[in-house]
Amino acid sequence: MKTYIYIFLLLLSSSFCFAQTSTSHLSGPQQLSVAKTPEAAGMSSERLSRIDKTLQEFISRDQLPGMVALVVRDGQIVYHKAFGTADVQTGRAFKTDDIFRIASMSKAITATAAMMLYEEGKFSLDDPISKWIPEFKNPQLLQSFSWKDTTYSTVPAKSEITVRHLMNHTSGLSYGVISGDERFSAINAKAGIVDLYTTKAVTVADNIKKLGKMPLVHNPGEKFTYALGLDVLGYLIEIWSGQSFDQFLRSHLLDPMGMNDTYFYLPDAKKDRLVPVQRPSKGAQKWERYPVTFYDPNYPISGAKTWFSGGAGLSSTAKDYAAFLQMLVNGGVFNGKRFLAPYTVYLLSQSNQVGDLLGGEKGDTYYSLGFGVQTKQGQDKGNGSIGRFGWGGYFNTNYWADPKEKLIMVLMKQTQGAADGGSEGAFTRLIYSAVDK
Image (tube, rainbow, N blue to C red; front, top):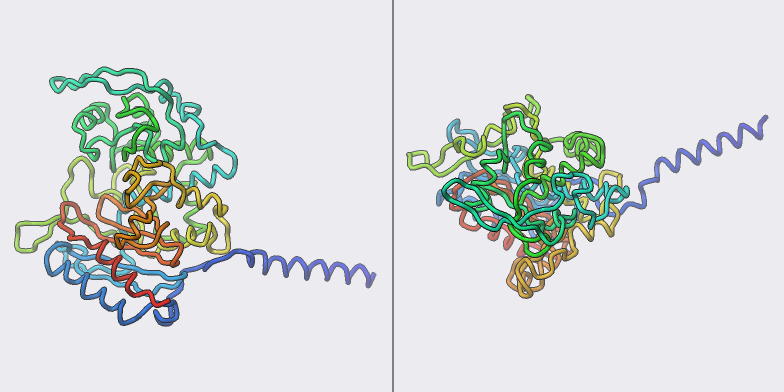
């Protein structure tokens, strides 16, 4: 009997030890922490302090009403400050935990979620999307367009759209209003396709099935055209996972990551932290709330709340988004969990998936499966290290992550029609100049 008890206790002890050390193999910071000093993370306090004056000058020149700025080095927050007025109408100042409509910054999160399913064998990057969405079978190219009545003619495309085409923006799909192409603005509007946000009772499935019947701008794979491809990918995630897109993100990425302030629709308890979209005003206050146009700025706190856009639908904080980027800089791990394999992170954030279709041979960036990625030409122009990856959002939000320097930058603003004056570039230069080791 004593022997059995000893063996049982030994097994129990071994199991306990395994449970305590089972994530010890995961590399990289597992949580964002506040650096004791910037110097502890290899950054200069004196040089980081230059950011204060520079960002404040954008406000003083009426180029921006304000912003939240965050810098992370090796998982340690070395700079996190708020500047200016979040809502001129009420006089509310910006706070570091403010929530922003991140618009196209949603795309990277959607691409990451898709690659989690890729690792489960749900699809191949070169699978035609008509395999799951029959409306995309036998795609057509726009041939002619009549301004008189918005009718058009088409010719068959040379090939079908693949999952890879959606992710690297070479599908031939288009945005409508956002594209700047008035033909597609008219075509998509007539078909009732949502470009950005809606507070109406529309679902992504409704939108994507309509989009599948629309003509393409060019043959799939022939050009880089920024488009609704990530909205299509969001719908595919629903099909592959058997969950609604918001439920999949919540259960597989956002909650396990600890991204507790990232949502399609904000809970009532957090809606007062949402920053209004502002635009320049000719009045004494210089800024005013943006009105309802082809989208409703009241998204994501009102309306039917059925719209889950993979390309533009999320709202988040600077810190939440930095945590997401830290997971990628770590090679796919965070919060004691592996979300993606290192090779998948490479495909998502480093690989060149467009050749010279974006920027050409001497371009500053190319595009991976989820990000714009810095080339040697971009590095030599002063934009940061080779391999730095990032993007931005429609309401003037910016981010990048530098795996070489283990640096992350998030700059959150919430404007349309603002001069801006190059805040992202200025912030970037000041960050790199503050690196000590």
